[in-house]
Length: 428
Image 1: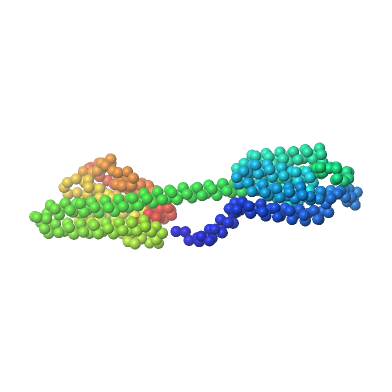
Image 2 (image 1 turned 90 degrees about the horizontal axis):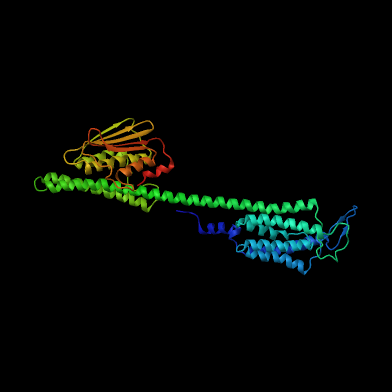
């Protein structure tokens, strides 16, 4: 469950410029461009060509007039449609900025509207148009000013409609540098957004995969819990019905076994359902199934009429949760299959648990008639369910008839520290 507060999420959302109302940035730029241009004009003392006092001439700007103020406000106003029509916004703002520069108004913050328009077009996916359009606009501006530009040895501005300065190498380099900044910056922002989107998709796919795996795990748990105990109940109920008139004492024993098996089934079902309801609980509500409860499992099988021999070899020790649960369930499901499919007559099941240095081997043999490998339901039950448990842990599994008759189930599971992905298997 997420612990983040709604207020914190709202603040994080508002901290992204893309989430601001569309008018916020244009309003700020309109104020900034007008005030900044007035300030820049005052510093330059604009209005004429002046002698620099060093044998050269310094260029001063055209004083801001109503057209100049209109152009300063037109760029931010056009940015209002930047989200719906980014290409049209780029062309329009570029034309307004170019006209302002050709009129030789003061060099101030007028270029920021063009910067926002360029970045908006690139981030919106119109990369080719933004790069090509910016390059064409610069080339066209340099070509036009080379033809109509005012040379340094000319005096006065009164007769010039477009008194732009003739381009030189340093000015051209400066303009190209300013054009590259928003283009490259927008590309970096776009790539960052793509990586964030890819990461979000990956997280979403991982969450769906984990949810699917969790559903399969729960399905296996429910199957294993119910199949084993209900099989025991079915066998003992048949015994009780058969002996209730002739041997009431034995029938009473069978009914007691039914009561114990049904109690165990209810306990384990509550554990699984509790895990489904409270995935974030720190511990299960009932003892976790594992090889520590092996004797209890074998006792229930014996009470159902099976002869069960058990052998444990190697250094018995606590196992990782997923391995411990899988080993227990494989033994449980194997004994359930023996009681179902081994056929009439006394049947003996032999359970062997071998602890190795880095693995634990589980083997269950019986001397009954065996079970068909085709008599199994896909989707996490029976033999397929046991095979899935072993595969999920990186172990091996095999099941089939024994050469001398009967059936064998064998699994080798890793017993060293398992990855975190498998650690969830211990909770039911």
